[in-house]
Each structure stands twice: as structure tokens, then as C-alpha cells.
Length: 235
Image (cartoon, rainbow, N blue to C red; front, side, top):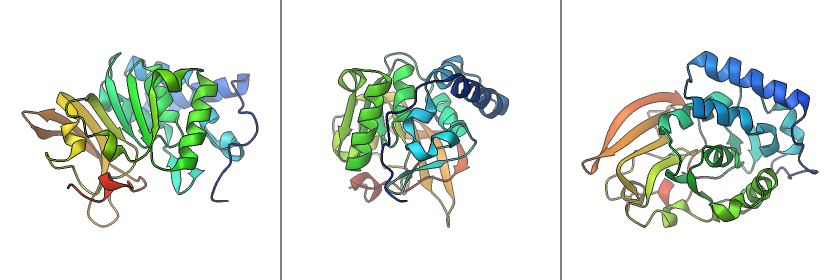
């Protein structure tokens, strides 16, 4: 089934889901070297199953990416935690998230007290993520900017954000004339996947310093491609 509905009223925490989430944090995140206490606390607090289509909620705490419909996925828990750790988040960081998707990473960013602008280009995913985020934390889509559209258009204001994150694969590292670079303040961090040779992708961590990118590290990953202007051109 390609286009998954939201399903019935989302299931909030039970004893089983709390236990499964604690096991996820212990065995998939802490055991693999994620030590940031703010990341660990957020992963413990946010109910991952809430952000999945109803027929897949029983898979929420497994070590795997899961389809959310429309050709998109929710990344495996470790990769989500890794991204959050690489962003080195402090409260009040101004974060541009490219691709709201399920809304799970958005919720974690909100849980970590950042100021989020999250943009989703697929209208059905935008509506579903907005609905679930409101169920999870009433008022959060008003206090934070959850927007429908092309993230390229939301990145036009220079020096607006301290952090940039994408859960979709860019064709390459954006050039210094690209809005995704220009919207980030000096000293800001960006974490996103890029295409490599063949089918290889790398999740890169970049620091904006002296008006250029400084690469910190990269790991091999697999993400869906970015759509919209940001995924097509640096012009």
C-alpha cells in the first residue's frame, strides 16, 4: 500500500511502548556511542510510534527505516539520534529542517527546545505530520513554523538559521551561492546526506566558517532523494 492513511486515533504511550522505547535507547543508541544527554532524553520522551501509519506502529522501535507512504521513510532510530548529536543543539537554536516527513525529527527538535522551521513539499505528509504534532503537543505547530512548500523558498533570507538539517539526499554539497548555504549563520552547522559514486550516499556534517564549508565528518547512509529546487540546482 503506497499512500498510508493516518489511521484511527493515534496510540499514546502504554507500558509496552515505554519499555520498547527504553530498550531502543539502550540497545540502539547508547550502545552505539551516542552520549549527548539531551539527545538521549529527547529520544526517551518522544513516542516514535505516534508518527507512523497505524499499520506500522508495531515496528516503531525496531532498528530499521520504515515506510510512511508517498515514497518516503522514517529513518532508523540510530541515524536520527546521530543527526541530532551532530547538530550539537542548544536551546533556542534556530533550525531549518528540510522535509518534515513523518514529523518525528521535528518533534525531537521541539523537545530539545530549539526554534524550528520545518518544510514539507508533499501535501499529504505535511497535513498528516501537522496533525500528529498537534496531537503530541497541542500548540506546537503555532509556536513553531511547520510549513508546506519547497524549502528552497524558505531559505532565501540570509543568516536566518544556526542549524540546517535535511532528511532527504542532496545531489551534492550546496555551493556558497546556494540559499541553503546563505541562510546559515557564520559558525552554523549543517547535517544532510549527499549523493556519491554509484548508489553510495554520505551523511555529512559541515561547519560554516569564513564563508565556506568546513567538513567535520561523514558516514555512509541511504536516504530518499530531495525534491524541489534544492534537489535540482545550485542556481
